[in-house]
Amino acid sequence: MTQPAPVGKSPVTWGVVAVLLAAAIIGTLWVPIYARSRPALGPFPFFYWYQLIWVPMTAVLLWICYLLLRTKRT
Amino acid sequence: MNHINAVTLVIVLISFLTVTLIGFASARWRPAEDLMQLNEWGLAGRGFGTFVSWFLLGGDIYTAYTFIAVPALVYATGAAGFYALAYTIMVFPIVFIFAPRLWSVARARGYITPGEFVRGRHGSQGLGLAVAATGILATMPYIALQLVGIESVLTVMGIGSTTGNAFVKDLPLIIAFGIVAAYTYLAGLRAPALIAFVKDILIYLTVIVAIVYIPGRLGGWGHIFSAASTHLKTANPATGKPYGSIVVLPAGEWAYATLALGSALALFVYPHVTTGVFAAKRRDVIRRNAAMLPAYSLVLGLIALFGYMARAVPAVNADVKANGGNAQLSVPALFAHIFPSWFAGIADSAIVIGALVPAAIMSIAGANLFTRTIYKELFRPYATPAEETRVARVASLLMKVGALGFALELNKTFSINLQLLGGIWILQTFPAIVIGLYTRWFHRIALIIGWAAGMTYGTIQAYRTPGGGQAHFGASTAPVFGHITYIAIAALILNLVVSAVLTVVFRKIGLQDGYDETRPADYLADPVTAPGPVTAPRPVATPSAP
Image (tube, rainbow over all chains, first blue to last red; front, side, top):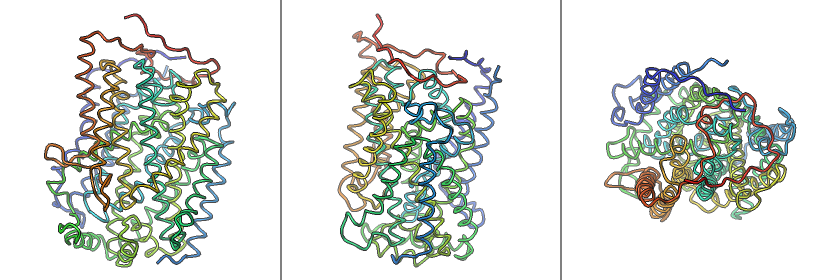
C-alpha cells in the first residue's frame, strides 16, 4: 500500500529551501522593519504596502520551494 | 438603519436557498461506493485534487474572522488589527513544512484526525484523548465566531434585531444554522467542499468590486487613510488614550508579532484545517496549495482595509454608534450605504455563505475527532464503519449546539477574541502533533503534563484578562515579563519547558515509553490509492518490551 520514500534531495537543495521558507516567515514576523509610515507608496503608508507585497512574494518563494522539492513519479 | 431593504433581502435569501440545494445535492457529488464509511462522510473519500482543495482550504481558512472580525478590529483600533495579514502570510510556509508529513502518515495509517495520529505515534491513549478534547473545545468558539458574523449581517439587514426577546431575535440565525446542520449531516464534507466554490466566487467578486468602486466614491485612498488617522488619534473617553494608531507603535510590536505567529502555528493544528489537508488526494496537492492559497491572504488584507473605508463613511459610524458601538457591523453597514441594494445583497451573501462553509467543516472535524478518538477509543473499540459514521453525524449536530452556547454566552463586541481564545487552547496540542512528526524524544507522559500546564495557564490568564467591557475573557494578550504577548505563545513555551524537563526526569527514572505504531517510511508515503475501507477493527496496540 505504501510506495517507497522518494529519493532524498541534496543538502544544498534543502539548504536553499530552508533559507527561502525562513525568509517568508521572518519577512512579516520582525515587526520593527515595517512599523513605519515612510516611504509611502502613493497614499499607502509603508506599513500597509510592505505587508501586502509580502503576500505575492510568499507565494513565489513557496512555488520555488515546491519546484525544488518535487520528485518525478516513477 | 435597520429597516429591511427588500432587494437586499431577496438576493440574500436566493443565495441561501441556492447553496442549500447545492448542499443537499452534494451527497451525490463524486459518489462514494459506501457513504457509511467515515472516510467518505468525514473526508469526502480523500480524493480532492489541487483545484478542489484550493477552494476547500480557502473556504476553510478564510471565515467570518476574515470578513467581519478583522475589519472590525481595524475599524476600531487601526494597525493592530493588521496582524491578521502577517498571520495569513506566515501560515503558508508553516503548512508547507509540516503538512506533507502529516498528510502522508495519515494516509498510510488511515488516520482521519490528528488525535489518532498522536495516539498511534506516542502510543498513548491519554495523549490522543487530550488532543481530541482540546480540538473540540477550541473549535466551538471558532464556530461561534461564524455565528456572530452571520448575526452582524442580519442585524444590518434589519432582521431579528427589533425585538427584545432573545429567542425571537436569534431565530433567523438558528433556522439558517439548522439547515446547514441538516445537509452537513447528510452529505458530510462534500457539502462545504461544493458550496466553497460559490462562496469563493462571491467573495472574490465582492472584494474586487469594492476595491475598485468604493475608494472612488469616498474621495480616494488618501481621504480614507486620513479619516482613519483622525479617528485613531482621538482620545477614547473610556481610557483617556487614543483609540489606536495607523502604524503599530513600538509598545505594540511584540503583541503584533506574537499574535501573528501564535495564530499561524495554531491554525495548522486546528482540526478543521487538518480535515481539509487530509481530504487531499496526493502529497503534492498540499505543497502546491501552500503556494497558491496566499491569493486569499491578499483578499484578507484588502478586506481589513474595508475597516478604514467604513470609518470614512459618516453614516456607517452613526450606525455603529446606534448599535452600542458594535464595530462588527462596520463592513455590512459599509455595503448597505455604499453599494446599490442588489450588490449589497451579493456582498452580504458572500459573508453569510463565507461563514457557513467553515462552520460546516469545523463541525465535521470535531465530529471526526469525537468519533475516532473518544467514542471508538473509550467506548466501542469494535465499532463498525457504519456505526462510526452514524455517531459522527450526530456529533456534528452537537458541535453546532455547543457553538451556539459559546456565541450566546461570550461577549460579542470583539468576536476576534473567540478565535484567539480557541488559539490559546489548540496551540497546546502543537508539541504532541507537530514535534511528534519528527521525533519521539519527548516522553508521552511529559507531553500530557506539559499540555495540562499550558492549558491551565492559558485559560487562567485569559480568564483574568478584562476588556471590551467585561471582566473575564476580554482579551487574548497579557503582559508576560514586561511585554504584551499573545497568551497562546506564553502558554506554549511553558508547555514545552515542562515537557522537556519532565522528559529528562522520566528517562532518568526509566519510565516506560509508549509503542510507536508508525514507521519512518509512513512520513514520506504518497500512496496512489486511498487506504481501503476499514472492515476489520484496528488491532489494539500493545506496548513492546523495552
